[in-house]
Length: 206
Length: 271
Image 1: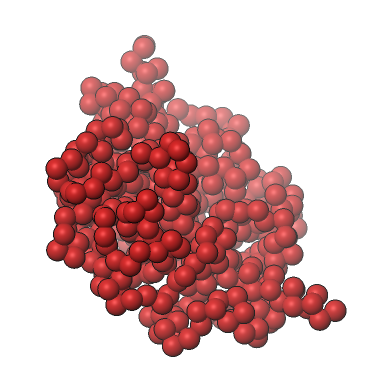
Image 2 (image 1 turned 60 degrees about the vertical axis):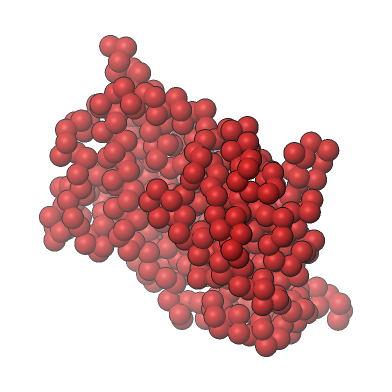
């Protein structure tokens, strides 16, 4: 019995040392997926609980994408649980809008290269307003600093899909960025319906 | 419109280039296309502008302290257990170390490194401390515009001969592109008053300087782990050469890098 307790302590300690350094990363992702701090905190706590429970199945080497994959599932499960109130209907990659070839957008003017100055709060709001899968890919790349392969693992999609989501996310963000005047509300489209997809809310740990 | 089709093919690759996700062959291919295509050059510029604007904005608030408290409370056993059980180096040095860089990153760096290699860790000679400071300064200097590379190529067979006659060792130049660490080139640097070869790698946007010299710090068969001014430092000795790796890359990824370099040096194929 005593040795069981010791083993359990040792396991908890190993998990803590491995996972706690990514708390800020987890919170940042949760903050953008849930779009408010209270829900983000709950999601992060649930994520660490689940991760500890599944720590035995963790084979490494990268703790961060493993942890964030669990977090993503927690967030999506939460939206699934809330059901209709949140209208988690989402732009998916098969959505015709998402298929718009980015290269046809009127980008090839000098003005398109320049970005208007925006304050941090505005930029955060613009990122939050991106539709779910695109927001997720962009945040994982630019804020969590994951590689394409790691984003693919977290999102559960092929690397090619990650690339197209990122390209699309950046095109949308750029458009919203230049359209925002720094005080306007919800400038990007689909803000109201861009919660993470309930369809993906399997809640399972990969 | 063959031109348009062409550019459509390059759209994703422009992003991958800006994200540092392309291997050397694709980098050349995309750069050649961009050099001859104004529209794609502007698209690339637009991606880079957006990326740097996002990097400049503060888009990330740290986890609130009360959340950290809640998470820590999930592992009472871990918190109460004597840390010395898992980290034998607990002592005055370690306490100083913790207060210096603060909190949990030490534990993370240690546990990650420990899975890869046995870590001697924190207790270092003052000579090693001084060299560690110097390699970090050299690393920071190298990041200033135009200072990173003297020879810029992803071809290991160009980098290696370049060092001939400049330093008194033939530094191993290992191409780890396939394993996620892109070889960027080489540079001559001065550490501890001696010329030192630096082989430069990149993972995503993180630059890694790998300093190689015949004698640079205390020889050690296990990896020395340090964090200075937020930069991770690893030092070890292999094949009679002293290696110092410095990067802002996360500790576990730098450990992975050290492991890959180390593994490449050991088999008969070692250069």
